[in-house]
Image (cartoon, rainbow, N blue to C red; front, top):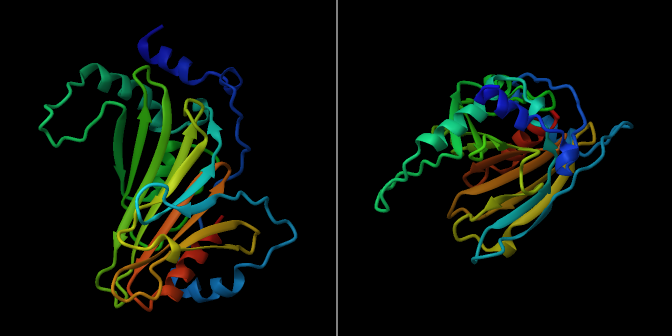
Length: 276
């Protein structure tokens, strides 16, 4: 047995041996990009629950636990078996082990942030990133901005992959409302130490008491929870940040804007949520 075969055997251990549960499979799909055309309609449509509404997966929101500003959003996620990842990401165990073997800690005065337990790959579109990961339950949703995407993979020195993150961000500074957006997907494996993930964070000088936590249901009955940050304060950037848990995977879309852009931002968020 060579090293790669050994790593695959480790990552293919059944979750029962690790006291974790396997996720429910659903089919992934991709919707068309019609953001500006459907943003206004989405505000009317969302909140209507169909007869076959899906079960709600609710997270919890609150002020940031340390410091004086910001918020946290906590979600319970599934832990996937490594053998369910069928894309080229199967190279991950070998890459992580190789990084540990060749890693030399930088001098204490160095600004290098590289650690051997992580590696990154860049893609031109979310579709390419989804194909690389190869997980049937992962959604390939449309985004309201160009999709340069980074996949980050976290593992340990034995090559056991623990967490996968997909992220993208974009700024439209030529827009009158200076819209910007960021997108993140978080996937856990059977080797993750916890199934509870925290999102959100420290948003400058915003008073935690002024951050509002809201939610809506899509026409398919999918729950989207979101935070409104700095709304109505024209002296700083404002934001809506929405969260959906689908098949145990956490999806987050945040949209920032100048004063007056709330309705358009909410339309973008609701149109995105309708794809689940």
